[in-house]
Length: 475
Image (tube, rainbow, N blue to C red; front, side, top):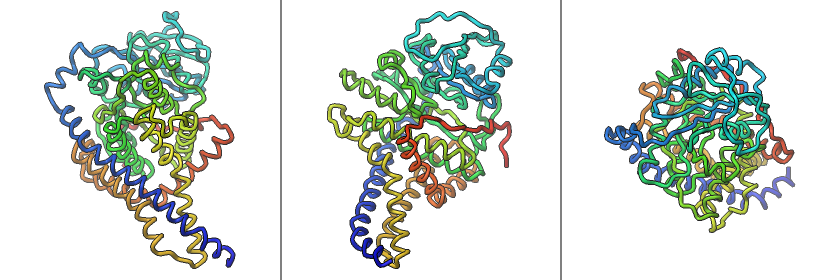
């Protein structure tokens, strides 16, 4: 114990300073994103409610869209999801669903519910994929095309869908996603405002606990299950001020793979989605940023808060762990494969602001946070209690996080307010506080595991069990 105490006497002071400085800088940057998001949120909130703009958005000037839906073992939710895509309020769109070698009854459910019949391919193959078994059309919905192919992963399935797409703009969505009826109209707004747009991101919300009927969320509720409820806070924080704030900084590196709109010609120019990366959506956006910068193409990739899609999040810690480990493993792989962007002025705000933040702030954060917890435990174990360090660490690492989460809830309540009941608002505030006690520490461990799996070259997704969409919320 004496040796450990002597070691801590030498190492602890500068280690504590590094940890505190790191969290102070990172959380201050999150606070900056929150501040920058307020004028963005105000602008989009008014645009979303303006009746004149809504009339324009319903005009024929809207570009035709192809909705790309990769599906693997989605028999539980596939029927409701496809129906929600087919019945969206949009002048001209198609749905291209790819069954990526599912081992359950996904294909059978599609054939039964949509009366499929086989058709010959009538398009060139722009991006090579795993072999396609067959193409099917629906007798019930002429806008539905189903591609049945050998399993190749989500990125490969999206490439197959993009090959089969007819229209110049494509929207990538997950099969377990429910898109709101007017979401496509809202998502296409930048194309009518005279902007040069390469891609647009929309909001993802948590469907767990809400009422779903015929592929639509008819009553939005905050889940009483604490695991799903805390994830509701995470999604609000990430979308309401995280990505909105990046609009002002011009370097958003993430457009969610569950709901993102892209120009198809740009995606083909960069070779489509990269296979073997478990966060193919982030990798695609980074490569798109590089493509635009290297060719001097001025095109934006904004995030818009009012187009909404709903997704089912993990309801158990086991499944959540698989998801968060995979997300962080993909983040590591993407950032390291594009490390030449780090503080590279050639890539503008992407190279000088967003990439460094994601590299130093997002990727390394679990390592630094673990260091802070270990230091706290060691000084307590040796009796060398540093009250000042413990207080400051809890303030910048935990207290700051609670404050930001509460602000995300307040912003939601003051603007779009999807959760109408006072009980849901109170539940959100409760989850915003308890997120940092136990839950956050578990996700740190999941993300640390990602470093080990990435070093071993693991590329698997892990099984993502679904409960399905409930017709009535469980109370």
